[in-house]
Structures are given as structure tokens and as C-alpha cells.
Length: 482
Picture (tube, rainbow, N blue to C red):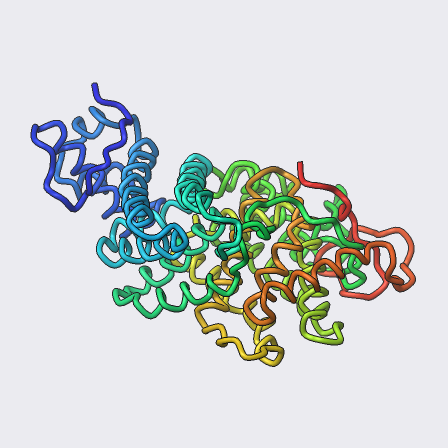
């Protein structure tokens, strides 16, 4: 019986000869249609066979279950996209390898929007196995490009970027436009090519093409006094507090239990029963406060976004110049993400599994962070100004960086990404040489800058009572990437 073999044939091209091959291709196409219409959670076996026009027994001739079919479809679409990228890179001059790969990605999205939307958007909702397949495919695409760049003379200038992260961010940018129904992507293509070129450096001088950890900076004095954390459980018996305070305690504990369960099991596998058990409340109290798991997830996602935005903005306005503001903002932001690993996983890894409303909130939150880049236009000296799409691409690439770190383990070491993040923000405005000089200067300040007096031992309090304050101690900021 045929199992799991990846077909490189297009779902949209004539099917292979023979009844079995035809039915398998129909099932893959059915998964694309069902997932694009209903999302991963709605792409049931019934939805897939309905879209494919085959029987349920036929489905089980080829796939063990819905997830087996979902994964096979990711593999199939990615294999076709990789063939397109490889052909584009081989046919172009080696110096143009990155630009050629981007053109192939955009061309694929334009020519096969259904397949591209499935791969670039819906695969993000499929849980750990699907995310693993997605990330492995990004690495394979990056190797095709890097193998070509390795043939160049050291004096040739090419984009100094981590290629798998770049490809992942372009997937996200294309997914956003495909979700909106956009078909004409030529303007985005031109913006992306110009943006990527702004990071060009001679091959021998590239320093950001790998994810080698940057030195860990001093703790930011602009982190809140406390990390995000649930309030303590109420003691036995009738609590001596107002009913509103009891409800708030339960609400917060449910939110943080949701983040913990989702971080450990993934959004799709998490259940209300597990959440209430971890929160220490009963199911009736859960449904009094939240309509369902999705509403509880959305609440902790929104809390995490508001917290991170407040931390970033508070630190940003402490800088004396725009590069200094970016340094302060992302020093605090990366340390904040590191201090709140389960909330980070909610925001950066699991958010696509919630459905259209959750995805829209994720994309809105990414756009919100472009506000910190606007002042960069004032420091430009004769270079073409980055486009609006370029600002979105910078923030999306930072998102992809943190996503990868959050997926890598239970304790993301995002502080070691600070050099990469600063390079992404500064180089399009200042040029790579000036950006690198600034980054080196700031990272060399470790232990030299006078930190405001700290308010004693850092206490962990309920997130609803945290305050951003100068002079606080940042925890866990000194670890290096494993």
C-alpha cells in the first residue's frame, strides 16, 4: 500500500496515469482546498474527501489520518517550490542567487496561489510536526542558495543575511497577501529585491549569514520589575476579598495556564480540561469567564503583545539618537521575550493555529512594531529610502528569528539575537558598515555602562500589577545559546 511518498508533481498539473496515483493527487488537492477554506482545524477527513471527490476508504488507502495527509501535502508543495527555486538559481548568475530565489518564490505564489497559501500560511497552524517540515524545507532552500554563493570570489558583494530566516519571512509576507486575495505581487517583488540589496557586503566580510550568537548585553534597566506570571492560587475556604478580585485571580490563572498547556502540547492538542486543571479552577468557572479555548488563548496572546509593546516603547524613548533608541528598545525586548518563554511561544509559534481572527491579530501586531523604524528615515544619507514593504519585511524577519528561537526549546535565548536584530533594523538606513560599527560599539560596552541603582531582589508578581521602571534587575540575560 502506498505510504507517505512525496510527489513532486503539481497538484494543478495533469495527474499521473493510473487510478491510485490519480486518487492520491486528488486527496492532496483536497487537503489544499479544505485547509485554505476552513484552516487546519477545519480540514477534517470529511472535508478533504469532499473536496477530493473520493471515498473515505480510499483516503485510508493512502494516509493514516488527517495529519498524515496534511504533512504529505506540505512535502509535495514544498518539493515543487524547491524545484522552482533551484531552477531559477541555476539559470541566473551566481551573484544573483538570492534575488533569483525571491523571484521564484513570488512567481510561485502568483502562479499557484492556492498551493502557496497552503504552504506559506496553513502549514504554520499544523502543530510541531508540520512546523518541523516547514522549517526543514526553509533550510533546504537556503542551502541551494548558499551553495551557489560559495562559488563566488570573496570580493563580490552579496546580501549579508541568514538565508533560512529570510526565506521564512518572505513566506510570511506572501501569505499575508495571499490571504487578502492579492494576485499582482510585482510591486512587492521590487521592494523585496531592493530591501535585500541594502544588506550587501563582500562575501569575505559577511558576519550575519549564520545565527552565531552575539555577546549578551548588560541587563536593560527598562524591563518591568516583574516578569509575566499568574497570581497565586487562592487558599481553601471563602476568600477574604471582593468577588471582582476573585474573578480577576481566576481569569489571570486561566490565561497563564492556557499559555503553559499550549507551550507544552501545542494549541490544537490543548484542552479546556488540562487548562482548568493547571489553573486550579473548575470548568464552570472557565466557561463563566471565557467562551472557549480560543478566547482564553486570544486573551493571553493580547496580554503578551501589549506587555512586549510597552517594554519596547518605554525603552525606545530613552535613547539619545535613533540608533541608540533601537538598541535600547530591542535590548529590552529580547530580554523580555527570554524572561517569558511560555508567553513567547504563544505569540511567536502557536498564534497561527487559532484561525483567521488570531492570524489577523498577529499580522496587525507585526505592523505595529514598524513604528520604531520610522525615525530611521532621518539618518539616511543619500541611499534609496526603504519602502513600506521593507519596514514590514524587517519586522517580519525579526519575528521569524524569535519564532525559531522559541521553537528550539523551553528557554529561548533571544538575548543572543540582539546583534542580528540591530543589523536588520539599522543597515537599510545607515549602510552595513556604519550599522556594524555601531553594533560592535554597543556590544563592547558590557559591564562599562553605569546602570541605575537597582531596587533589591527582583520579585515575581502577577502580570496585572507589573510596572515598567528604571533601575530593575533583568533575569536570565546572561545565558549563551545552546
